[in-house]
Amino acid sequence: MFFIYRILINLIILLSPIIILVRIIKNKEHKYRFKEKFCFFSKKRGNGKIVWFHGSSVGEIMSIIPLIEKMEKNKSINKILITSSTLSSSKVLSKFKLKKTVHQFFPIDSNFLTKKFLKYWKPSVAIFIESEIWPNMLLNIKKKTIPLILLNARITKKSFLNWKTIPSMAKVLFNKFDICLPQNYETKKYLKLLGAKKIKFIGNLKYSESKIEKNNIFRSNLRKIFKSKKLWCAASTHYNEEEISAIAHQKLKKKYNNLLTIIIPRHIQRVKKIKNKIEEMGLKVQTHSQSKKINKNTEIYLVDSYGETKSFYKICKTVFLGGSIIKRGGQNPLEPVRFGCKVLHGPNVQNFTEVYNLLNSYKLSYKFHNINQLIASIKKSLNNKLNITKKINTLKKMGSDILGRTLIEINYLL
Image (spheres, helix red, strand yellow):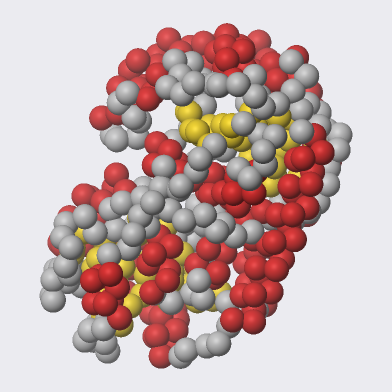
């Protein structure tokens, strides 16, 4: 199986010029930094101990920011390397004020490139986040006897069944991890069945909270204008969810004549298509980058920049969280909840089942099944102000405990 995998990876390398070019045209790839995926590094290694984290995209990278904050204060660590695969994750990371931390794109998982990557960076520990399993990289990490951690591991039933079709390969790979820290009990069960040798359940790292400030300042004049409006926000939306949010706005504006709907797409390269679609519905749309002032007749405020979602959560307390109407599995609801937002979500939240179960029990999130239920939930949220400070503080305490115990496990292997 490893032999077939390596043939496929080499085929991808042969086709990579075409793949990269297409991705650059679609604004999914950096036009200069793509070379990092072929181990032409844009950052110097420097001397001393390096801690390496790898996560696929935005969600995984955001989940480790609280850890990075703590580890940057550790004088024995000279540099923290974060790798990811997507352009959006690199843009989000650049918004933070990090002194020791550098970002590079993860190399294509060929035997040659992974060896070259490890020879250059020489990490003291390799920490893979959630479900990032790259065969050649894992095998070469263990050949160099580098401690290997699967952090905040997440194995869904679907991915478990996929791994079960190649049981011998799965056992070899999951056995390479010195420790696996699952984010839920379902993953703990699946890791054991897949051959992981040491599993320790601490909790979902996404409960923890970052105190690092980003390099963006929310425009104060926008804040003032927003406060005069009836606001709700559709965040981390995917295809079709923006249109559903716009339909909800059309229905709601009959009741609220000063209604403003904020839409924050998960992938901002879709903004132009989203804007055109909503304008075809007869609604007035303004993009975040378009002007420093909001036009009086603006109905939909479309956010077309990365890393500013928290700023909107601070002023908008009713949030529909996307990826939950379509069969995407949902997005992490903990960030808006920490800012005192009431989270509305569709039925497809299987990626965060345990988190949503807890939030639902605290009455911090509300599920809807159709657009009429979404509209009713928005109305209820806009009309009722709830004091949820005590519940949010309980979640923050839980996150702090998980963060502290996770840090102990990482420091042990360092």
